[in-house]
Image (tube, rainbow, N blue to C red; front, top):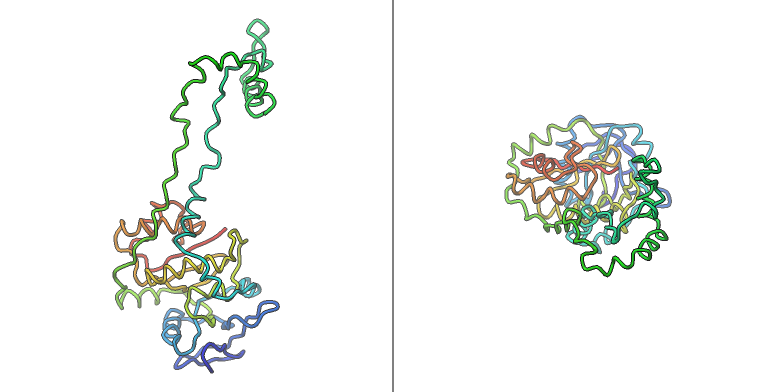
Length: 322
């Protein structure tokens, strides 16, 4: 078998690694993008590690896939592959900064202050001698005046004389002023220390049975784009595999974080060879994780403090999208 050539359907040998029967995965109108075993292997971490070591010879990146008939029927959501060169056009720092700004932008803002006083007559409310108004009546009338552009214009016109008074409009309440969102803190610095052999072996040995997938790729971060992975709706200008792959490349370079597990559903897991060892280091990475996906750490984490706590010394990074 030549470099980057997928095995044929059936059993496969890569160097000293024997794999159970598998089949090629071929999305509609495309060439095969992966080869996947038809059943789970009992010690997938060890097999994944051995196949990763063979990657320079085979050109095939191993990934773990769920042993789930539902996932199998969907061909693991490999549906719209694109070339890895598409990832080259995306900058990880700029992408994460954009996601940060979108996540922290206050799109509603404070209710604009009325610049002139309201009168019972203008609002159509009853005076005390006429029986008064319920709270519901008052709220409905005020909201109508604030939200209706025509009534606001009329309100401005009938009270124009008050606008000339230097005491009007009143100074804005600082509590109603939207705070400027904090800027993106930038990419976290690279992790300094690798997992020990014992830590790595323990992490890989903890994995449950899984099917083995092989993808022709230069690096693990490119797998999602090359297979067209897409179990959730695209919400960026680039296909999901492209913008996600851009960030994965950055994490590969800085933390030795390699794509390990794809699925179930819209979930991926990375094996991290240089994880943060302190809460300070983890907090800088957590800022990136918090805007990268909908839930982190395999624990449904969404906020930076929670993600930080989960990242200290973590050998696996898990991400999920809704």
